[in-house]
Image (tube, rainbow, N blue to C red):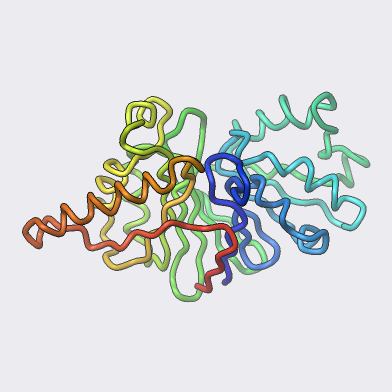
Length: 265
């Protein structure tokens, strides 16, 4: 299984794209602005989109992508999401005011897209790839995702704050790669708590709940103006922990995810 990072920023700026991951050639996890860097042929091959939640940075490219490829496809694109997320898309995006309702165009029997509700804990197998919805704690109904590869699971936290239920499930999986949101620096930790995002200290507190020692950890969803600050704070916190007795130090190496990276799992 290949994972291509299309976007991993919490906002836009030059060379910064919002959240979207391409799994193999035909599955998207979130549909942020990073989708816009795909060619028409690459977009045409996408059969399934798994959305973590309804916030704009995770869905912004979905209506435009569907419009771009609708005439090039013979089958609908399947949009997998929590029922509340689907309701938001129906009411506020695909409402024939903001954007056409592609779930009934050109007809209800042969639409450009189909909504596929899924719930936390549910697994979906598409083209031989197993995708599981994981718990997330956010300001709107949200999930993370785990995707099974040959060498272990690719796990994405989605947008979340402290989340014990996430680790209860993730610790049952052989993780190959762990992608954790860290949207704010410590100087904005109060805003992180209020908006239900992680900052470096809460990220490390979450990782202490992870029993998959030694797995790759990448942070995502950093604001463009905050990325270097966040990484500097993480490095300092890890250095401080390394100076503690060995049973208190962090076993993880944490890296910053970047658009354009590709991983084989």
